[in-house]
Length: 381
Ligand code: NZQ
Ligand code: ZN
Image (cartoon, rainbow, N blue to C red; front, top):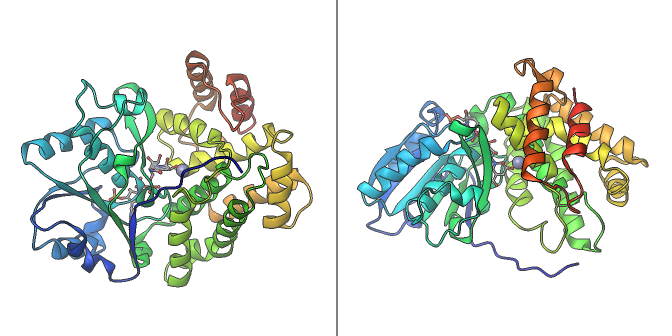
């Protein structure tokens, strides 16, 4: 096990009805901005619950944060925060709204010229507006971490940032909010959390036994509950387990002191930036290709994963079983499953060219170069 710091200050309020307790989490007298997406929260009663809970506060609303939140949209919110002297943000939504709100929080106090430098140049976030979150879609773990991924429409880019200043102060995890989620978003959530764990687990052994066992526990919970969660929306036991597993998959717990890959994610972000495919769809597509390409380098952990998660003895079988699981959830795992991507070859060429130009090296050993990325993507047609 390598050196590590472990820090996670996010307070979690878990369970049905917890939205009513928001007021006690926000400092008295705050001027609040509630941020949300395209309006799903108005159809399922979450908006009504949140505004009721905020009734003792002065607040403004900012809606229209889109999936894969855009810099262009978020900067409009930054203007309002500055003009209206907002001093607390409340994100009500999935990963996109929460990530977008983190960016708004950081950009509002950013002193340089262009706050997107937080994402592209690793510009330091010295101060951010405090914020909380009401999670409506278990998937990303954004509700319990300090990272965000922001797209820029004008350049078709998608880059991540993270800062200790952008941890939520609290997050409300009420599993009943999942009742109105479409099937596609349910499958997306399970796949995203599964891949978050493998990015921090399927690398090489460092004798971090507890982190391995935590990872395997989260994977088992996703496998045991995933299909029920996707097919039986009313099953609140399955939903509760999925919500908690998603938060634990990317909150620092399984990353402590272990090598991390993130190759599948970084290739996936490029696919989303160029095609608009959902984040988790890109993961399901890239994952089997990356594992197959890196099978020798990852052999020990792939064998452990195969044995402990799928009860199989070979690395190839472990990869196959995982792809089958993604497909049973309803997620496409090849470009051909996404006819909306009309020219996969053109997408592959653009991604390879971007990585070549940037000199990007991915993976836990920084040994996935643009040539390997080409092989990975070519294998997914
Ligand atoms: O916009 P609204 O109306 O809210 O609708 C959303 C959206 O259309 C809808 N939805 C959310 N909750 C719902 C609901 N519909 C019905 N009932 C509900 N309860 O679902 C759609 C997708 O929402 P989105 O927030 O985009 O999905 P997700 O949570 O999967 O977030 C994806 C974003 O998070 C980033 C991704 O890159 C992507 O931009 N990620 C963030 C991470 C992080 N901060 O740690 C890590 C991840 O790896 C990921 O990269
Ligand atoms: Zn993800």
